[in-house]
Structure formats: C-alpha cells, structure tokens
Length: 322
Image 1 (spheres, one colour):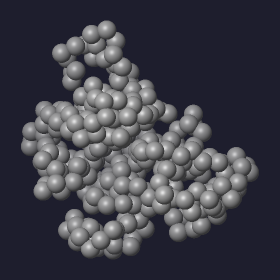
Image 2 (cartoon, rainbow, N blue to C red):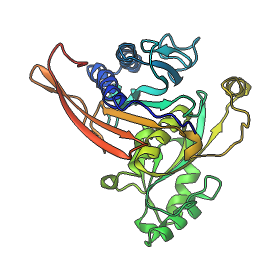
Image 3 (cartoon, helix red, strand yellow):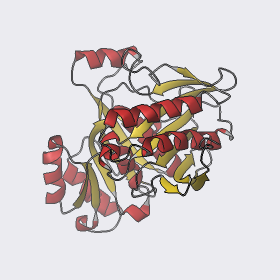
C-alpha cells in the first residue's frame, strides 16, 4: 500500500470529470446508438482530465492502445506536472442502458495514489461483495452461492428469505440464480451496470444485501475502489476466455492468473471514487434538463477519510465543465 495521499482538491476535480462525461452522454439517452454514446462520454472525460494539474496515467480504461483511440490503458492524462495519479475509469458504465433509456447508467472515475489499483486487463472477473458492518470472511468466492446466502443471513441475524441478492441477468448465471433461490433468498436481476450493483450492497436504501456473479474485470476494480471508501467486503478472481487474454494479463503485471483478490488487493491506495448518474437509478438521479441548464447528481467518496458526499449541481448552458 502506498504511503502517499492524494491532494484533497482532486475530490472536486473528480466530480467535474464525471459530470462532464455524464452530461455528454445524456444527450444520447434512448437513441439506440451505444457506440456514439460511449464515444461522446470518452471525449468529454478525456478533455476534462487533460485540464487537470496532475501527472495521471490510465490503469483501467477503454482497452489497450490498439483497441481504443482515447483513454486506453497506459495513456497519460493531465498536465504532466504535479502528483502522480493512477486512474481507473468507465466514461459510460451502461452503454446499453443509455442507448435504451434504462436505469443505473453512470459515468465513473477513480483516482488513486500510484500503484494503488490492480492493473486488471480487459477480461472477466468472478465477484462477490457485501456492505460494511459484517464479520470479516462472511463471504467466500469459492463457496457455494447458497452457503454464502446462509452465512450472510446468520451474520445479519435474519432468515435467508430476508436476504436480497443482486445478479447480472446472463445465461451464465442460471445455476447461481437457482442456488440462491433454493437457499431462500430473493434476487434483483439487472441487465447491465454491475458497478452500481456492488455499491448497492453498501447503500441501505437499495435493499440489496449481496452482489455475486461474473462481470467485467475493470468494473470490478472500480467497484472495489468504491467499497474501499464506503465500507464493505469484496473478493474477485480474473476469468480468461483465451490465451490472448492470459498474455495480456501477464503483460500488465498479473503473475498468478488464478489469484483470489480481496478488497485491499483490488484497491490498496488512497482512493477517490466518483460516479455521476447518466440515467436515473437506485443511488443517483440521472442528468436532467432544467430550462437552458442541466442538473447532475454525483456520489463522491474518499477512502482516507471515509467521507461520502452526494452532490446536486446545476450547470448553466455553455458552462458545463465549471
């Protein structure tokens, strides 16, 4: 873990970066064009990042350099002066949600001290997560899903029937879904957006107790950055579909391809996590027009202080990123 801490001013700067991406993406809500929505969010986030006084490097991004013209893994952003910052980002978490007008689309970014985030390649990750205030080790990625439900119920002094799990709606999760229901728990299936699903476990008003399933590895690191700030437990393991993905993992420094990571291994440094709603969701309102202006709703958290802020902002026309 790094002994360095982030400049506190980066907290509001992270908010501005996420707001810029969300505002850009909201103009394409419901228009059915995932690629265009993602591109405008990427463009806006990159522009905002390059206005910051920092020596930033993208460690979780839009893919490798040959796949992503901007915000690729390894890209340098910012002025090149000042503190060295590792950056994990997803300019539009929920491209399909945005294109179809669905809920829980977010613009997400995390700043960390150098070396503070797992350099996860663009592959899949098995994940399990719960919120704070529970005994250490209450969940285990290698345990049967039903056993995790029962152990969580025991820790919460409730019945498994009181537990609500959040799982991505994918064919690969059919067996997991069956076992969770067999244990007595109910499930909230989500079409996309597993960063929001993980954070929901630490947000009481959502009613979600546990998140489990396989999703993107970059999203797993971003979710871990959030949980490290807000409190919770998480485990993850990279899942590779082919030898090319294994080669990429080794190239970014992953030595043990079968490692099971806990929260502090996924996000170990001083972390600032920020998410701005693009569409309305469990935790955040989406971007909305207000006359000639737009309003945004942002969640920003910092691991060093444990501070969690919800920020409502009104942006005048022509002054979006200010």
